[in-house]
Image (cartoon, rainbow, N blue to C red):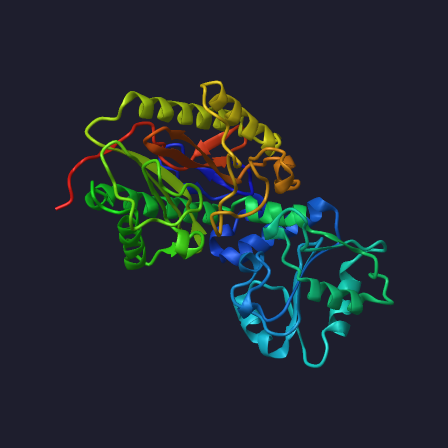
Length: 424
């Protein structure tokens, strides 16, 4: 892996201490890790300042904020990382003390009546003669589009009549890298979330039996998540997705109280858990009966062949759409129709974490499939097929990009377990 993600022991998957600017990483907070990374990205982008401009964060805020700030803010606030790596927070006076106490910011500048003057002063000493200020807006990536329209207008007013008036540009590329390239701490937490989800998957055969409804399985899984202090990797109402048989609601469906596991069904779960602020997103399937039939096994083989083809293509420097193309082609060559979604997405703070998409060049995805894959990004590799009369057979794995390819973070499902015992 790259310096930005650290190295792992070949035997135990342990994170080794990185070198260079990351030498003291394990003495840092996760917020400081990401702010250090942000400074490197600002320098690499050739901009003067990366600016996150926000207010009243308790009611919803910029998606990038949890990466660079441990807490919330009330008044108009300007979080600045400049090309030297210096971090400056210009905030309302009542928000200043917690930021100072965190130790994450080199300078905290409080204000009372207006942010304009201290904000412009910080820009003046942070920018060169031809200022470039990157702010968080994007037409394609929701996780890089945190600057609200109202705050954008406020920002423009603050800059009117100054040399910074025409200096704003999109920080989309920077934010994508900051979210996407995982630090060692982030990777440890993602692995832990995957392991927590695997424990729940291992328990599924104890309560998913013939005669049990989709909704009962959903309720059991959510109960176990709450008992273990796990959060949901997407909307709680749809996590997990549970499907049994040919009449189930495929996709982002609602588990049914009327559909029950029956002999001959393919049973499918899509589960995402969040632990210590980082998420997993895994799909698993079972056959309901004593032995998987040939059509189910053929579907399983085709899905795994496509995942393997995509994993083989997943490497630094390649565009996301090419990875999707490799998986899509492998599936179609086995006689199945192409899947109607992207092959994979990035996972981090949440299941759908923005950035480069392993998807086709469809209009609905904007420019996200054109992104270049880099080491340290974590992706899902996912697709499924409909097995006529049996239901949806979907598998989803997770992998991290290395310097030369990718490494699976999940233990791949290569066989079809069975669920056969009647509920008592």
